[in-house]
Amino acid sequence: MELRVLRYFLTVAREGNITRAADFLHVTQPTLSRQLKELEQKLGKKLFIRSSHSIILTDEGILLRKRAEEIVDMVDKLEAEFSSMEETISGDVYIGGGETDAMRQIARVVKELQLNYPNIRYHLYSGNEEDVTDRLDRGLLDFGILIQPADLSRYNYINIPAKDVWGVVMRKDSPLTVKNTIQAVDLLNVPLICSRQAMKQTYSKNEFADWFGEDFDKLNVVTTYNLAYNAAIMVEEGLGYAITLDKIVDTSSDSNLCFKPLEPRLESGLNIVWKKHQVFSIAANMFFKKMQVEFSNILSDV
Image (tube, rainbow, N blue to C red; front, side):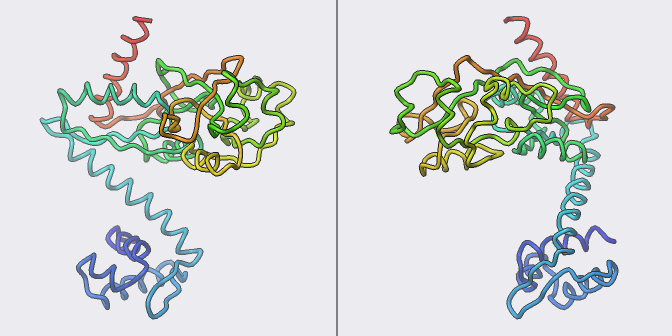
């Protein structure tokens, strides 16, 4: 199976039309159609349902698209790593993480590193713990930022010198806005929008569940989410109260939303992780060393 043909397939899947894909790839439509037909014959599966104006992926086509994207991403990453092995340090660093204000710490490391190595590029991937660790395990990320509680047993990690504060995002006209802080009892009889990671009961210690105590199973969770942007929209539309981290939802004076911290105060630590026995590219290794120095300096000042 040729990489070129996989790229052809991904272009057709993205465009949803043979003619547009052929124009984008600068090949003739008959050539592209023949390549796709040969790919189907090679795999022994029908990948497309064709009509006069568009194509739709079959279940087998959807699976191939996912695997082809992984293969192409990995090849592109490998080529970039080898092309960076030259006198001028360059290359790409791939970092995944959830929504957290602690990303500022990563941004500061990147900014410092750019002063001496401006040819290093950084690629950010947003997702929850499951998304990030999946891509990390498959070699598509160099580093992952995980918000505690998280399973760190499979990785090496460094503690990020920052804490995320848990609280409730609500509309400014909500009854609970009269409170400066939110206690567990305040949340028992209201509809809640909760992070799926925080709701998981698979960790040996789930600080979020411990905060609620015996009332955890009594919560009226109407919606779960993995990234807070959509949760904030649900709150704005009056669906409920979102339990989330501070500083990742717009609660400025221009917003219809506000944030109230939990009481007792609940904070989550953060870790930047990488696979055990990981062999870093030159660029990723430079980032790693800079991160170690910068985070050590911050901790020593605390």
